[in-house]
Image (cartoon, rainbow, N blue to C red):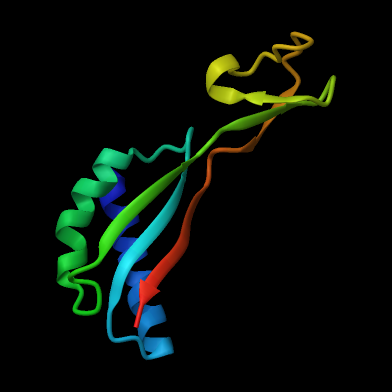
Length: 114
């Protein structure tokens, strides 16, 4: 379950930010999670329940996860399509010369703090 390590990293990163910006409390954290990333939202939420409480500045913080759609671009015809629905084969020209454009990311999108 690498989600635990991801959550530890997020909390550590935000603790450093809080110190740098002299924040006293982070009340909400929004993460962007790509639809085909290797992290599972349920496991991230489970890890969050335990990890964030160990941080004084984040002990009451809420976690929100936004799923970002996976989009693939065909290098043959130039069109984009849903990766989850069609996988690697372009639904327009049937080419396998495709590449993932978005949907594998994991970002801290924003925080609410004071």
